[in-house]
Length: 498
Image 1 (cartoon, rainbow, N blue to C red):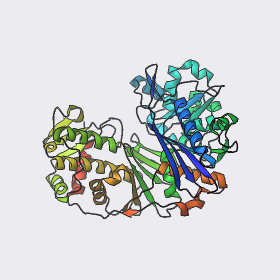
Image 2: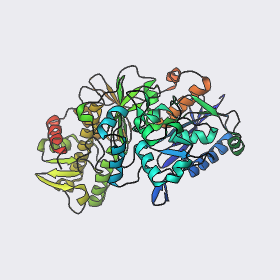
Image 3: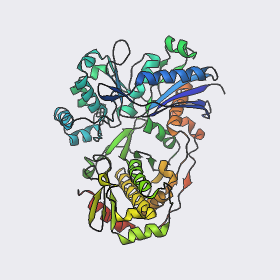
Image 4: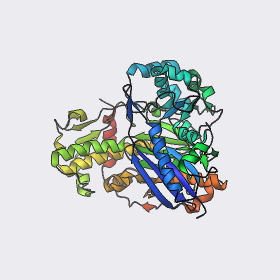
């Protein structure tokens, strides 16, 4: 091993420092749960605590490994404003804060309509504050004095890069991910940037995430024991980091279905274009590490699944996954008298106007009424599980089709739902012409960021390292489910009605 790459992988709650050798083998991973703190009644990201924890891990690792570079990946929808002293001038308000409806309405009255902004900035509105432009608007209202003290507006990966190097910048992947800050039609900062008055506080142009930003400051070197020559990259958005291994290894068309609390369907495309029925839905574009558009659709599939399975656990005193019993699923589909519809959190997913509920034999029970009122089908553990999985699978089918999944697209599934056999079998039945496969990259986000770090050290394209990537592809054997298309059509006919 000639050198090691340290990755700061800042998730929403779980923070990691991962270390890779120069062949991208994992050497060490340090994890910590760091939650938000309360500041003036708001949930705030404790950026200084996160920074201190990362420096502590780097100090320990620097004594054991020859760290040459630091690469950074962070979760989305976060921003830090800093003043002349390099410290936050405004608390880093967490995107999870609920805000009054009138704030949303004022934002669109001043910045432009939801539909027009979706078309120009390729951004869909994601509540509560999962759009950086709106988060800044609200933060400036709450902390006007801090706004005046702000020298730099730093997107989340670049805040940590700035603290390590003293250099301020932005990267395309974070700028272009449902932020309202980037105009995809002009490939420049958007009208929202100008109406917020922050153009002068941002770099002239964002940069690609695998580019060199600078070396660590003397203070960081002294604090950690790292060499003063340790280099730091620009930083990258987490979903786009996990997409890199696919982009550099796959020559055929594909869609990545990354699953968890949020299920994210991503399809690399050459242009930005929305269908009429996608306006107002959670369909938007990312920008890849290659600085190219990636059509994206999201839904809270993991949250939907967890919400209803927790209700079943209360009812039945068990929390096992009953697996895929074809006869049970065939019976639920054939009967066609029970439907579970999104959304547990209204305003999210592919059906933002839909209210979470079960419709059974003509009667409706809303999710917020459970477990006080229970649908009849929930009295049978296996059939209820089937109903839940069918719902999430149909929502996934819609998201995949909206991002452009076609018979020529291989659909790769990573994340939590790759361990749900029923969900996988249902997807093969709902998308019979598209091959479905599982992948198994350990710590995919950290690995993508490590690829960026290696490219930076060796001053070669990220694509050069395709032979170091093993996606661990396992095809999913397809099944047929008679009647599932008719069931899905009936499900879709109900979903928009409240």
